[in-house]
Image (cartoon, rainbow, N blue to C red; front, side, top):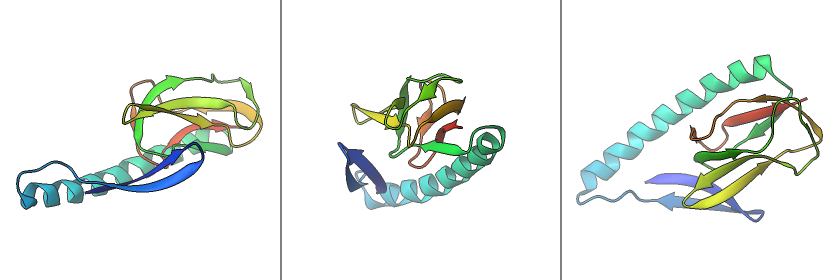
Length: 124
């Protein structure tokens, strides 16, 4: 089983998803491998982006795939303006600027898979 945190219209839901299986052994093996791999990838990407970019982080609120990049480097944004659109379970989830600023970096591309908490962009 995998645990996800999903935000829908400002409401946060903790969701447990059981991966389909005909026996208990494959289900138990898959989650053990996935969580170990995901945390290693996310911290490795964050320091590189944070060191070369802005001080305000824009992070994914849920796991998904980058559907659309709404902002570009150098663009001025106000708090609440969309930066990235994620797709998860056939839903489009906007990731918005946490405060006013200028886009310093976009750290993902369309089609990239992202985990919850992954750094997507930075602002100054």
